[in-house]
Length: 330
Ligand code: 2P0
Image (cartoon, rainbow, N blue to C red; front, side):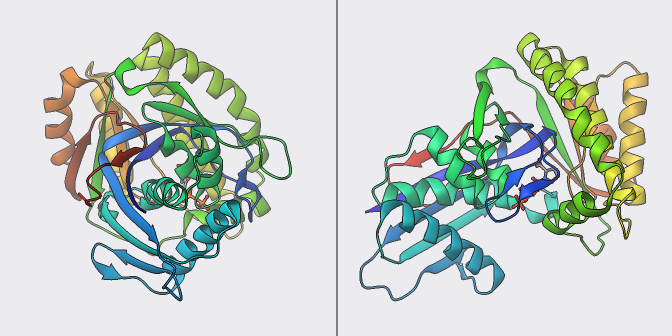
């Protein structure tokens, strides 16, 4: 049976930054994200007895190397769970422009997990699906759910209690996110190697982990109360703390460029001018800006005019996994 699933990417308001188990992808802290409707991956999977290996087409092109190894490793987990030994044909369409600075791995692995587990005959609950997805890429386990979701770090060595749970559905609150794309690029420290180096060498890492519970408690209350200032302030401060840990690593590194800082300053100036807007940044130089619908025009206009900014992509809160009936990639 061929199954097609669609998953949206997510942006963390409380960041996942550090692993306690690299093989099982178990984090050192809970994280919390908002799923975005503007960026998604659609994946179809069909297990076929006549195949001698997995095949993976991304945006109509055959993928080899590191990326296809990650897909096969993930399909091995699915086969193990289903106790089947059959290879798969995987086709993905990625509507997550890599230039927008979103990790396509979040929507990518969420869509792959949903489509492959269903195609092989597993009938997983959302919790089981999130737990499985986590082993493809950590942040992807939050994309099983729409709206706001929290990934529980768990305490078990086997990862059985580490998965995402929904905090509030997308209908709960119409906040917006602008992805600010920068023109300049730099040699990237991958999030995987960046967080590993931070855990192993940064003296600030301990403080980061200790600060998480208060941030989580505050932001969850802020989301439930629809208190935009509270959510924005906590998210921005949490992002700055995560990035501070990288400066303490050995060798030290930062994901920021001069334009990254220019965008951050502009967001702070917007606030001084009475427009509530807050930034967050992942393992790259691009900035995401949180704002309310009534300020969309002003936010877009202001961000677009910052020198070094090439594009501003706007998004609403998105939904969780959906399965497409017509088996077509869209
Ligand atoms: C996050 N990031 O919470 C954080 C904030 C980057 C900064 O999750 O190794 O691609 O596959 O579990 O999920 C990016 O890391 O890493 C990430 P793996 P992932 O969104």
